[in-house]
Image 1 (cartoon, rainbow, N blue to C red):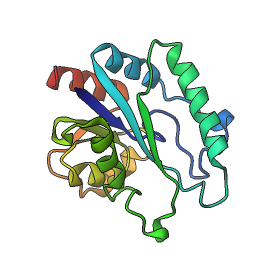
Image 2 (spheres, one colour):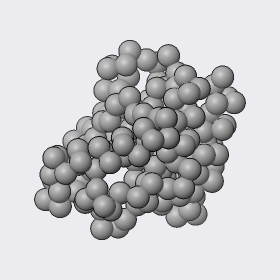
Image 3 (cartoon, helix red, strand yellow):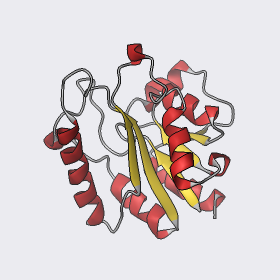
Image 4 (cartoon, rainbow, N blue to C red):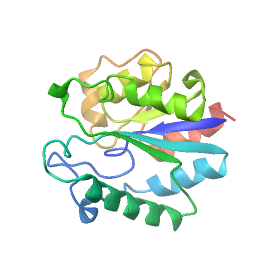
Length: 180
């Protein structure tokens, strides 16, 4: 099985320092939905692993998160694509859970649920914590320059062998080439 793990905010949709709290605030990044559809058409399962601390901060609830994802699913289906699963961490960093990236708990759960060796999977994120979580379980880390990506790149300290791509569209092309 071929699987790709995506962070959500800043990779698929525009990010906000004020959090994405409503479906109206969820705006896809140009070509991101088409890229996910292309991954699907190329035989990849696509899974999202996303920190959503806005839940524990009281900014939105799980029902609202589900409505945000319903919007994403609808727009994605119009492009001929789909998401195979969404894993999210509702905790704030200070709660010390094992599922919040950069800790690898969410990724280990993905490996367990899909029965896959993550060393055969690429992961795309826009923050250092995404890349650190990917590295911790052997996922190929890919940094996109969208979202917080430019800032992450400027700070440095990326895991060895991190691929740098302009956006999800460029990352998708490289994944299809490298994992064909």
